[in-house]
Amino acid sequence: CTMPFSSCNVPTFVLCLLLLSFRPTSAFALVPPRPSNCIPTSTSSSPAGSTDYDGNALTGKTKQPTPTLTNIRNVRDTRWRLRAQSGQSQLNEQSGDENALLDEELLDEQEPSGQDVRGGGSELVSVSPFDSFLPRGDKLDSYIVKISLPAILNFAINPLIGAVDLFFVGRMGNALALAGQSAANQVFTSSFWIISFLPSVTTPLVAKYYANKQIDEAQDTICQALILGGILGVLGTYFLLGHSDFALRSVLPANSPALKYARPYLKIRALAFIPSLFSTVGFSAFRGCMDTVTPLKISGFANAFNGVLDPLMIFKYGWGVSGAAIATVVSEFISAISYFVLLSKSGLVKISKLFALPSFTVLKPLLAGGAAVQLRAVALNIVFLAVTRATQTLDNTGTAAAAHAIAIQVFNVGGIFLLALSTVAAFLVPSTIVKEGKVEAKRTVNRLMGWGLVLGGVLGALQLLLLPFIGIFTPLKEVQTAARAPSIIASVLQTINGLVFIGEGVMQGTGDFFILAVSNIIAGAGMLVALKYFTMWWGLTGVWLSFGIFNGLRLSGVLLHQFRIGSLANRNLNKVER
Image 1 (tube, rainbow, N blue to C red):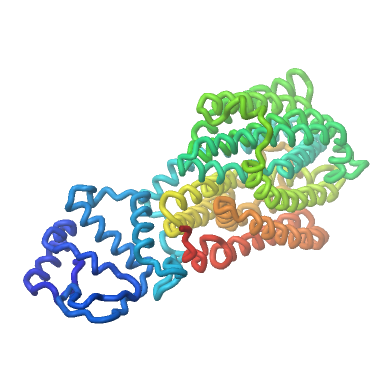
Image 2: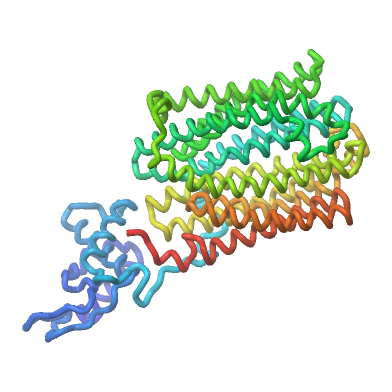
């Protein structure tokens, strides 16, 4: 009960305990509401003749306990009971926003000048890393599953379509064609993600504005992101069309026989740069609005064409690897048009704003976060390009490169679940901070990390079980044999990926882009050193062992962020925003 033990008789106290054991709200009716002079305050002056709640006389100055976040919450609950009795509210219908408002009222009443109540006092806010860690089938798990399933399916489409491309190119029975397509695809992907920092920054910004019901600000962010996407898309297309040989030299030697297949694929694929950027902005906009279903429908609709066109372009019309690139470009244009139409219908995009001069106020958070994301993208793609080049130079037959392409594809298909959860963290965390505060956001982060660990272990085990079916990607026995060891290592690394992907999604959600960039730069440098020596010692297996160094260093960055330097680390939870 809310009053001191000395202010009630023993029978009443026992009855209160019994009622609380069976129906806690029933006991509140028997307990007189605590007078306002019982709300904890700082040192205050008591007028002559005043009494405390026990009837004892108060004289002069009385030292009251320093207010902490815990006793503020207790007083908030008391105020809710008072309002419930007066008919202003229902005790069991407290929303997060109303709680936050009450907290602010109480802080204004109680906080001494110059004192940080939330960070000071005798009791600090702290959330154990194991608090709400493992999935347990509660409401939070249900919500995570609800918004994650469409995201997982959406992320599954692109790697699966890539697997379809790999499958049909592999059916050509030409290891060089497979190696060339894989190398060109890596160049396009690296170029795209070096330029495309927009999704990582747009999603948490839109999520924050949408949670605060600031629809105009969300609309401005999306429109400015589309304008930037168009500018960057033109630059990317020009670079890949006009300097394709220069770009391919980052992964292929100048005299590589795979250039014959890689060059036409890359030039055709370059035409997809602009629509691909528009699609990623549209995808991030819907995610920020907590809508993961619409992107799934668009991706499924667009990429279905890719699956249908691949065999037609590659075999029926005899265009080979170039036919696979044409099918991909068509699917990207369909996706971009679909996103634009649905964003316009939903009111998230206005045509007039797309032709307005860019606003520095709106561009500033995009550019500030984008600079850090750009550094991270450069670091990651230098690593990926180095890996691709290393595999291309292991032999002149293309066997090692083809085996690596299969292993990385299996790795990506397994990682789509973890990548989807990472994107969910990027918009769920900022939304939770706005609606429920940092403490609940920290518990949400713990649960997401738990999901990452469990799913990573399950996916790794599943990939090991599916290892005997690796032959579906190519009929060449030497390629199948070379791909076995890398595929086993990839399966083991999925457990680490579970924590890494979700942790880096949390960094994006909290806006800690610079920390994320530094972490990935250090990890990339470590991998480049490992790649140099491991490849000399163990060949293709050494390439994949260097991935273990890379992900291990990234995991260290995630743990440092969550426990020490991140905005949701316990030491920073006490700096709750006013």
